[in-house]
Image 1: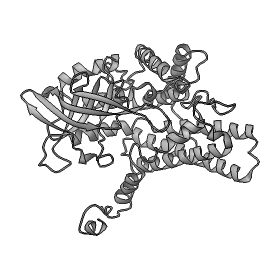
Image 2 (image 1 turned 180 degrees about the vertical axis):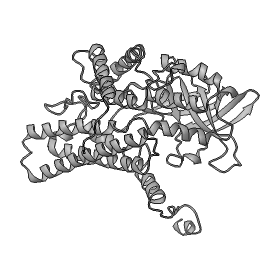
Image 3 (image 1 turned 30 degrees about the horizontal axis):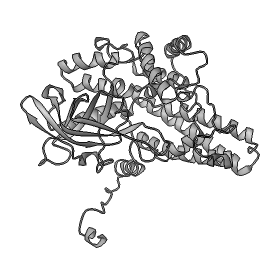
Image 4 (image 1 turned 135 degrees about the vertical axis):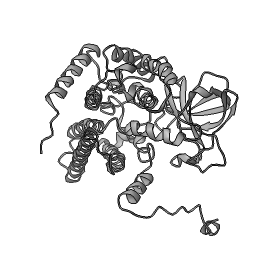
Length: 414
């Protein structure tokens, strides 16, 4: 079987490549090659370039300032940006452009659209997502952050955690409990909150790699106008479902591109290290190649479903399980190939320790960094356990998982 994009789609791809060629530096190695300060500067400038060239929101309707193009153009754009190491996620646009914007178009008020959408496109508003809490990560409906109404405003108290890019954002969309007596999937409201106010505090969380990508956010009598409630009060769960569909439907083919680039680079490292004649190493590399091809085909299946208005089946959960486990195996393999140098103390950069991957989002990051970062892959974005429960319950028809913290047996455990 041979999968081909249409001639019109390929013509659009060539247009994107020409724009990237004309606007990225000649020595560009990908955003991953930049340090944190340089990434921030690039992101600020790159947003403007994308906006001027009509690439910031290609499939937003033109009435909202977008390109008015189809889903396939967005997929092609994301593919080419990923290959060039200049993808939207890495320049911190996804939360506003790919998720909140379409959600406001679907369920927001006209006033919300007129105010927020232009500011998302201009970059005046930088967004982060307030979902996870210390005691309700995978169980999002168990959130405890609350809000009560005071006239035309809502007063918010509570804490969010693992909030990516909260330290660079000036607005946050969040779920808060507004009816403590309602069932946990009800009584939740979706709100838009200005972070530049005394009642909002951001504290950085440094991960095992030494990077500062996410944060804790504390709300102490923070306020937001009632007009910034999206959807109905106490019906925020349905709004979050709309947003989640945008979050998971944006990049069906990107993962295959990302992992192919990293695997190709690791194969080259293996050749340099002279380990490709080792039968065990060869077998592990062959398995990695097979996994990447499977991910590529699953991505194409998800793309086909989207283009033919077919609902995504178990592929989404299966895809998440597969790539998260694959990435951990691949970086384990990288440590074995690199050998003793993989234990080099952080900050030292011996020869061949930092590997260039031209055109990929992992450019010049150490394999050790990727190895450490991969430890969280089976947790973030929906844990492997949650994804297996989804497949088990919705595909295989198995009963729901027994919660060991519920029921009389819990007394025995204590």
